[in-house]
Image 1 (cartoon, rainbow, N blue to C red):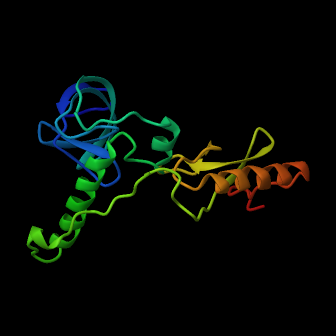
Image 2 (cartoon, rainbow, N blue to C red; image 1 turned 135 degrees about the horizontal axis):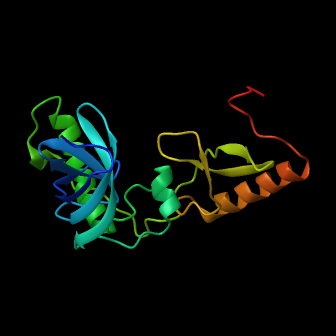
Amino acid sequence: MIKKNDILILTIEDITNEGFGVARADGFILFIANALPQEVIEVRVEKVLSHYGFAKGLNWIRKSPHRSEIYDLAMTSAGTMPLQHIEYPYQLVLKKKWVYEAINNHTPLDPSVVDDTIGMDEPLYYRNKAQIPCQMINGKLTTGFYRRNSHKLIPIENFYIQDKKIDEAIVIVRDVLRKYDICAYDEKSHQ
């Protein structure tokens, strides 16, 4: 029986489109952020639900050859760049696999009908639209992204995946709002 805080050594079998490595411990499925297939990782179980759980990687015993340097851990925590630990060419392979699996789950599909994923020359600073959450943190209007599966804001100024001009505009607007003491919406008070 898997319990919270168990320390395990696991081999990652697969990866989800949200960037979670998938491993099994005595048949119980665990999802591990920042993990890649075929990696062997020492993990600590963080959350146990009825059919699956979540674990945190502590020590990478064997790393994948497809591992890439992480730009910013905050972006993984926020879930805005969940694949940043994967080299870009391998991301394209995985995206093709995920498209095939999504369709094949509903209707049988010959894998050959799914074309290769079309990549970009530069996989950073490409988005041209942004919706940026704001919260009051320590009495200051702050911009960033929510921590994955929460409404706790992670302050961020460089979003890496959107055009740098958008990042600049966010900081300018945030600073103008701060100058005039404009408060962010408070979900608890509805103000």
